[in-house]
Amino acid sequence: MELYQLRYFVAVADNGNFTRASEKCSISQPSLSQQIINLETELGHKLFHRLGRRAVPTEAGQVFLDRVRLILLAVEDASKELRDSPTLERRIKVGVAQTVAPYLLPLTLERCRALHPNLMVHTHEDFRPELMHGVTEGDFDLAIIPQPVKDPRLSVEVLYREPLLLVVGKTHPLATKPSITAQDLANESFVLLGHSSTLSAEIERFCGAHDFIPKLAHRCSQVSTVKALVAIGPGISILPRIAILPNDKKNLVFRELSGRVPSREVLIVRHLQRYQTKGAELFLQVLRMVVSELVTAEPGTASPPAPS
Image (tube, rainbow, N blue to C red; front, side, top):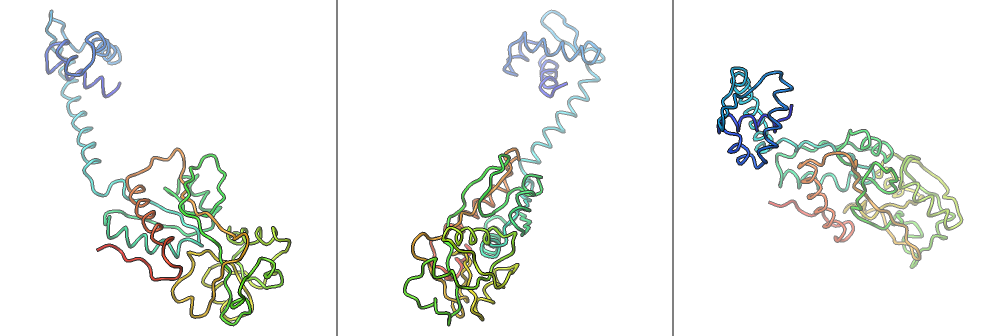
């Protein structure tokens, strides 16, 4: 039994005629008649007396008509509620990589509150493999993670590209060296994130492409710890451009390497089969707006203000 059959049934009852009902429903009269016959066969009762050109509900048809009107009214009310509700489809879950979350989330969430106060965003910060698993399992509406992503179940959109910059303490010899090549880093001690970090993997690939393995001094779980250790010791690191904050320039120097500069792509990842809610689209609009401001701003400058 289908909703369209119920609507055809009510149209015949209201118009008392198969031809007028078919015109109202924009369907041919033979097709409408066949659907009513299919409905009668499924129910095991005749629903109409066919009196020439007139169609009059039988006793069974009248009982069924009263129930069908309630069903169609309930369906229409539910449809209106979904269309009119300011909050439905505006609760989303977003996974964000640890090397992205501190720099994008505060600005994006602040802007969301200003532009879309009914949008409820729940976030989860984690490593890329765990976030990809969350998207494939349906735990997240989307994730914001660095490349690579090769799962055929996922759609991938490049959110932004950025260079990876050398970071050293103020007193480190490389802080004032006119030009720095990858080979200048071969004998330095590195402060890196954990083994699960795609940033660490990218740094190790970059060093390997220049025929050396980075000498590890410290492993950290947070970018803020990497910065703190680099600031006080001889260790160096490589961090994404977006990670530069205004206060960093007091103790740290960020330098771009000469030659082939290491870089990364940050992606928006979604499940190909997941329905894209209105809330997710609103969040992505704001996210892209914030990113466009950040990537064009001077590194380490004040964050762009939220709109009034």
